[in-house]
Length: 424
Image (cartoon, rainbow, N blue to C red; front, side, top):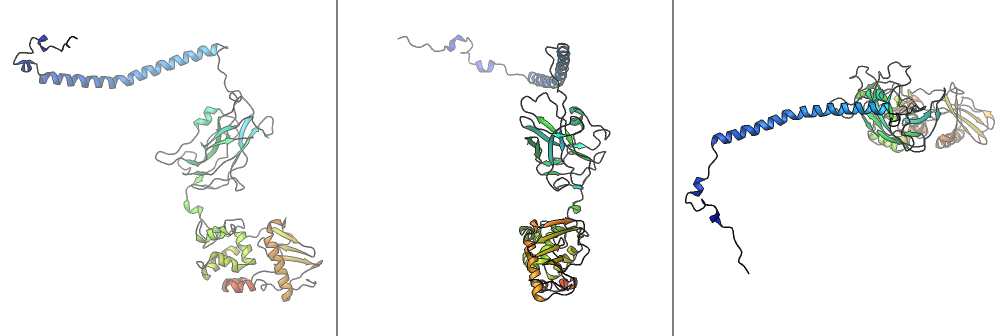
């Protein structure tokens, strides 16, 4: 086998020279400077050239697209179909509840989540309709000045998108919550929506809520579904308004609107955990079982605090509704806070004079039964018996100065009544 041949250094005639390494040239300082200058020049040149090339390419692409679109427009066989006009549109089923504050849930006028409907606007009527497949909807915030003129009923998709309001620089998203939803069967309820900023920073100082279709199912791609929008409204940023007490409170007010009961505070949580959510709930239990109400509130509510809270609750307006509890031998007419205003026992009407102990106990039992079955009572509106003094009511002064045990036993003593009928 032949021996391997290795690289022969003798091929380089200068390799054996004793000063071979010294003879190799070292780059001069001038050449190094020249090379650095050239590199810097190339870097600067490329940096200056890049935006110019981008601009030229962008302009050429735009020109090409314009020419292409014109040629397609002239060719019927290649023309792209635009969105076909239709009578379909989205609408909000009810108006938002006003006023609207930042960081507060947006609900409709009945206190329920906002709801979107798909309707057919053919003719003068809006007829609910459905599509064969679900559609994707996005909830947005619109400028209150859009559309121009309140009588303008139509707008283009481009005009709608142009008037969408985004958050201010450095701020959180203007609207938070479930902003992308799926509509099935022509109806969808919106989740929790909240504004994070007020509306005072835009020219109109007012917002609208809008809803637009972002995706439709197969077979509907070329159909335009008109966007929905609410009436204009202001969004206020006064945090204190959210927790403001009402004077006088309404029966339907949240119970934390009462004095000494803070929103999401200890008393509020205790009450709501026992189903006492409104001022009406509070007063009903105060009339039926004040001792239980005091136990729910706990020792944290002193006698003085209780007096303030109860006095505030008693200033609420009763309205004109009455509630009727019927039995085989009796009919009770109750006011909204479960006080008897009128009683018919065995066909006899009771008059306001005085009641014997056994009669008082009997009617008190009937009232407690009515309280337990409150949701099944017959509701009457129109002031049928609201002008009459309650047969069984608490004396105001005694309520404010006696403990819970005494309150329970003085519920029937403020107005003493006479009944000419046989109670049992």
